[in-house]
Length: 243
Image: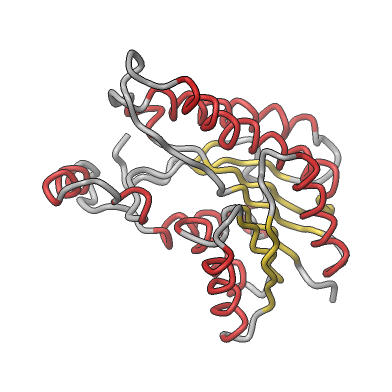
């Protein structure tokens, strides 16, 4: 059998890390892409290999087309091809529209919108038949909370890409979907929030809790499995019913 291979951007921490671990549990060889935190990427790889899986860390900025081409090249050289690409890399800075520093806007668009496009472009060129591309958006698009305009706009670009690329890949047997988590208990999400704010956000979904990275990883595992291959061009809101 040919080894199934997955590339997870932003795979060193948070939701990306949970996705990398979950796909490794499905016997994928996993390429853990990271932007700068080599120690966290190494820790993710070590957890996978200790459990008997196969993984390598590869550094690269998702918004840099040359760097990401090199990441994909490394994956193909090491494992022979790619079957799954998950773009979990993203950044978030919150501020009202009137107050947002436009350099911050540019940085979010560079990583969240351009970065998704760069990764999707490489995936469209390289994924093997039967493969899947999954991108990450956010349920804040529907929640429309003050302070989130720039971040939500950058994720709206991700969702706009999904169905169009799925249609462009007609005949390739490759699916393209987006997962849009709700409030999820990651280090990034919890940073700077007091206990009352966290409790309020956790109480909003009908399930009355925050999501976990593992919750999101299960959705990605389904979409990238044969069982999920009939789902194509969709945005799935994994948010406990918050919207």
